[in-house]
Amino acid sequence: MTHRSLTTRLKAICVASALCALALATPFTAQATTLSDNTAQASSDTLAATATSWLAASFMADADYSLATLEAVLSGTADSGASTLALYSSDASGLIPGSLLANFTAGTSSSGSLGFTLNDVDLLAGSSYWLVLSNATGSTNWSWTESSEGSGTGFNGLWANSDDAGDVWFTNSNLYPLQVAVTVVSAVPEPTSMLLWLGALPMLAWARTKSKEVNA
Image (cartoon, rainbow, N blue to C red):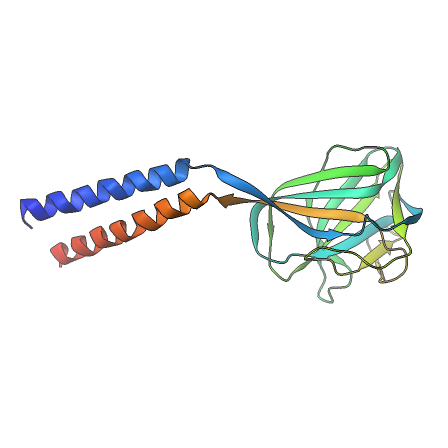
């Protein structure tokens, strides 16, 4: 390899590395997607979640989400004790909760609503998930509506309940539609960051090719 060729390749690597560093330093934009929401419907009454009576609402992921934040706002109130909201996968039938994936952290709550947040969650496109509500020492009232309508890219109109702490589940499609809004917040790179990556990758590929040619 000539000194000139080596210098050219080193310059390309340096420029590519600088572009990569700038791309990594460029901030990401938080993009929120509403997966499921039926909270705009008129509430009819409530069902109580306790240590043995568990309530569940299903939603689907419209795309793959990696290390995203999942936010759930339930229409309802906690009478006593601490509410526990958990994320479950679907069983093989897709009609009832399957396996526990993670527990939410209780977030901001207001009159008539309960907020929960789950960070660093991975969702797979086309997969069904369940929000399961329970209360170990008290009860939490989850509002339901007579309407089975809802909105969002992952609204599927499925709800379920269990009288024995999740051992046996009963699916509800039109009976007691539990009211909840589910939002996923993912990080999306700024357009500038994408352009920097597009500029850096060809240079790195070229430098790698030249290196192989020299070592051949």
